[in-house]
Length: 505
Image 1: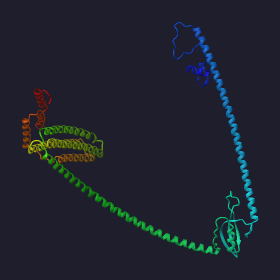
Image 2: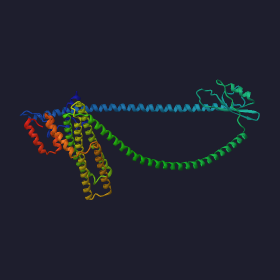
Image 3: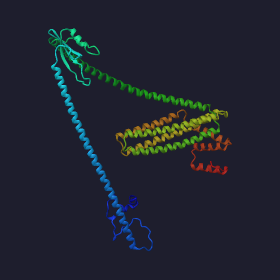
Image 4: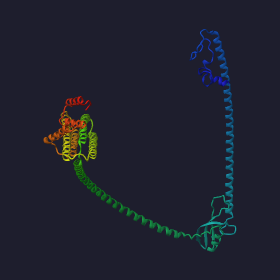
């Protein structure tokens, strides 16, 4: 209960680690101001409050002293327990040391007994084999000396726990005695060794082996010299062959590059020719009505907007080129232009794909329409020729703008070798763009003034003969595009149609 009372006190009233600080003692002259002001009655007696506070401080001090006394008692108990554990550890250590000492003394005693046993066995050892001779484990060597045969014998251990081995020499009169002694071994029969050579025979064998070793070493030295010479010759041949192979590979690569470019050009020409033939075939079999041509006209209007978007992108690219030409190198500029060129080509291919899908859709939807196929074919060709003319004009304008910017750059002092190489690289890229634009539209002939007039006449005739408002709207857009109407004129036409029909064009 006392601990709970102390825990219930405010944090400012109980000091850390159970130590009493200045704030724990009552201060009559300077009472402690609590962190949170408690509401007091409007009229309080000051003397009674001081006495109450002193009494509370005394009670708190008494409880804290009791807690400190309990803490000291607990610490004393822990110290006594620690001393007991230390005494137990010391006793265990002394017991372990005594056990180690006893084991060492026992090992010394066992070693002494073994030595005494070996000495006693050597004392009673005899060269000849009798009944007291220990049984053999194996016969290691057999030597003939004089009229006797000597054998080096390994004895069987009398103690199974002992792993040591004992050897001794014994003499025999003949092979029969050796076989009888070997038969005394228990278990698997022993194999008798062959006679060892005499000393003079050993010397003769050693001499012959030494001569053989010298001969083999001399042959090995000669072989090593020959192999080194052969290796150097083969290395020279390999280097020569490598140089020849590299030269041939370089020639093949150069020829492959040229042939690859030629094949890619031929393949591109075949693809363009095939695409042109397919387009002409689709146009030839397509019999489109007025609604299909109106859709194509609206698509051409979107193409015009796409051309203006390309022009803005081209202007942005030229601004980036002016920024990068003074600081960046040839590689970075080439990569930048290459990425943007590929993006433009992808956009162009997507647009052409959409046009082809639109033509297929319209040809499938209105394939069984009217019978004026030849006139529709001519009108579609004229429309494609008009689109090609606008695309060529846009490409020529881009080339002209690029040439002007390059001329201005040379006039401003950018005539270094890197800049000239970069400019030539850009010119090649722009020419490729122009060539691809020309090749993609090469399937249609360039219109002249007569064809343009015929195309315009055909549109005006169909516009005057049509009774559908939607078809007239698309034809008006096509007429405005061909005749290059100004925005003011287009707005006036829209206002007129709005007044007549009451809806926006």
